[in-house]
Amino acid sequence: MEQSFFTGPFASMCELYVAQKRATGSKYETGARRLRQFDDFAKKYNIQNYQITSDLVNDYCKQRSTENANSRRDRIYIMWTFAEFLAAQGYPCSCLPPDKPKPVAAHTPYVFSMEEISDFFRQLDSMPATNFTTRHIMFPILFRMLYGCGLRISEALMLKKEDIDIEKGIIYVQHGKGDKERIVVMSDSLCRKCAEFVKIAHGETDEGVPFLYTKSFSKLSTSSVNYGFREILWDIGIPYYGKDVGPRVHDLRHT
Image (cartoon, rainbow, N blue to C red; front, side):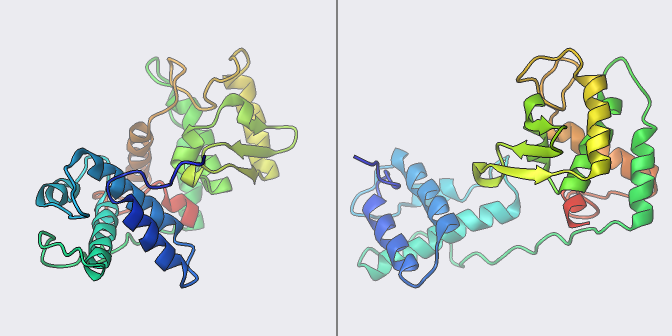
């Protein structure tokens, strides 16, 4: 017997809510996943008769260390709209925040000029070698893959040695957004760079080793990549002022 998508205390109402959304022609996949997140979170609370309690609301609305303002807003918005649905079914909730969440202003992507891109990669290729890190070897190929293939940073850092097919010129992304798989084609110039990189960095490495690794052969961390990215921006005269002001690694995809 197939397990229900929803398994928390609001499961039956969640199923009814999603069915109502999809009856209008919407796929409602992202919303359903966020609603399941709320339903799963509610499992540790004593929920009776589909009543959203104040303890549940207060805890669910707390900012999490691993999320940004947009992600938090989306979580709360789903809870709010689901509470409105419950009220329409005869299960009103009186403990929600007074105002429905409003969309947070989106980050404005920084689109690099061709001159800036040239300066960026020139600076990458001149990174000095050190005894403490592999950045001078890993970063030039990492950022070329981000820029040349439009990979997300998480996708690039999850790549294994065997995910890069130099002969065919393709990258197998095993864990893309939503944990989906896809194939990405490399340009001839990027494929040549990858071939050079494999000879230098993977001459004697085993299967399963991250394609981009640290001195201990673990995968690079997102924080170290972001830090190195900001250093290079400063070196080429593009100031970085904070998380929401200035270029992000992700903006290479927009460029």
